[in-house]
Length: 126
Image: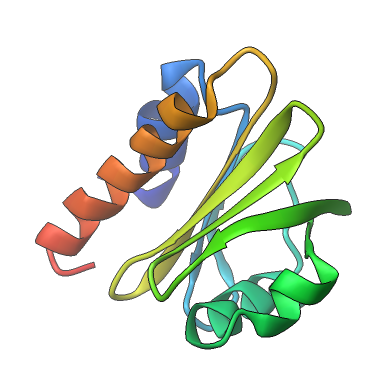
């Protein structure tokens, strides 16, 4: 399965995730949804946040030009909130999954979708 298929089917196809992207741990994009552009520096900030989230907690998380308040950050997951929507960033062995949701999805629903795809990718050594 291609990386783009994971974005289109496993994330966007749920209708709960509105924008999504998969980036390598080096910050470079592997697959992304239409009109969702994460700069490599933004992705790298997230990767670094998995190691030390103090900066993200203090100044927020900026992805695709949108600033999110960080509500959770650990060595696997970073969750951000912006208005009635938010972003879920989950690290696997080789990649970071980004999923953005809006007011039509409950945060828990969106989180479960991104986290489950990450669990699957980890189980197949990605």
